[in-house]
Length: 316
Ligand SMILES: C[S@@+](CC[C@H](N)C(=O)[O-])C[C@H]1O[C@@H](n2cnc3c(N)ncnc32)[C@H](O)[C@@H]1O
Ligand SMILES: [Zn+2]
Image 1 (cartoon, rainbow, N blue to C red):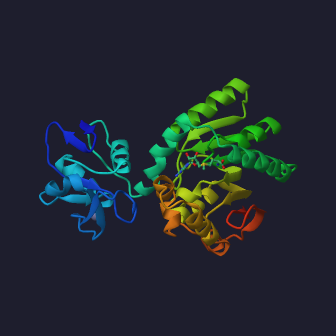
Image 2: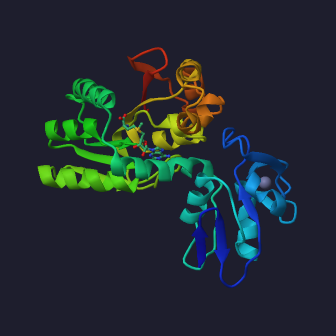
């Protein structure tokens, strides 16, 4: 078993030192106490290493998260990696034998731990609840008389919209998906307390949700913004839609990026990390791009502010 203590991972049987560090492009803000080293895995990427590890880093290999899996598998885990995000990721993908296999889309898990902890302690912010209630009203209008039998919301969070809709349309099955186990637990308890039999919650994550059911309506709000592989996520969401059904969602575009660049305080490391993909412009899409990805024309569902266009795409 690997033991994780503070900044170090050690293994009892074998103890080969290695540093696993975050790619520079993923966390450009790690710490002023960090310096850059080229990854030993041959990818050519630079990683941040904490100054405390300066001496040891000249003697042991330093891997980025993309390159570390093979090394972890064959050598046993050694010492030290520097960011909390790295530690959480490695912890999450280490099995009982202490073997760590980090998936290629690990960037999408960076905030997994963050969200899980977030919903353990935080309530839904007032503004988000207002929005979710307003969205419930819009969807009620939209859904009326369409013969919709099932609805799924990905990245549901506290699921205010779903709770409203499930109370209103008692013959429709509603499903809320979120990667954070804590909010899935809370929502499930709440649905049980209220006695809502047509609303279920399941832990699942984008960009590759489980390929279980398909739905007449799929929604995804304020969630793609955090995702590196946004185009894949949009494709996968559309795959979950039944023929004749719809996908309604919002996504970050160039205006969103500008708004966040201007709106996030330069000292706010947390927000900068949370929206790193967006601030760097790596997950920006447009209505035209969405059309290219899905082969179906997006229609404006609701325009909130310029940076938040909700689009509706109907499946043939
Ligand atoms: C800002 S909240 C939005 C909640 C709700 N949809 C709303 O509009 O109020 C983002 C939610 O997405 C979830 N999330 C973040 N990344 C995700 C991913 N890759 N897959 C599934 N859920 C994710 C978080 O746990 C969080 O509950
Ligand atoms: Zn590498």
